[in-house]
Amino acid sequence: MNHEWDSRALLSIVLVGLPELEGRMALRSHRSLLTRIHHRFMIEPATVDDTAEYVAFRLKGAGADHELFSRESLAALHELASGSLREIDRLASAAMRESARRKRKLVDRDAVARVAETLTLSSSLG
Image: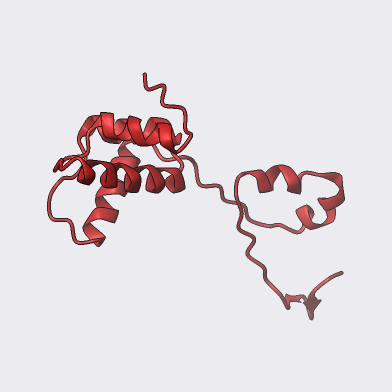
């Protein structure tokens, strides 16, 4: 089905999904849709530096006025989350709760490892 009128597109669709979407779009049954996609953009997993900047940005937005995560804990967040912002959020939130429960002012690597075990992530930190 073509959605054009006088050589102008009548309809533009922005398709957003998880990385698994790309594999599904490659299926033969979706070929006609795939050929109509003119632009593609994939967000790569965050780097260690991206992770640190992202956490700092989120904390600043929440009103934090000082560092809450050690460098080592940020590296652990990145490693355990494989650069996934959703997993970084989940781990960071749980690690902050764990640190607060233990009355610690700074989230350390051990707090991240502890919550990773409870969140069923591999806690094999290198």
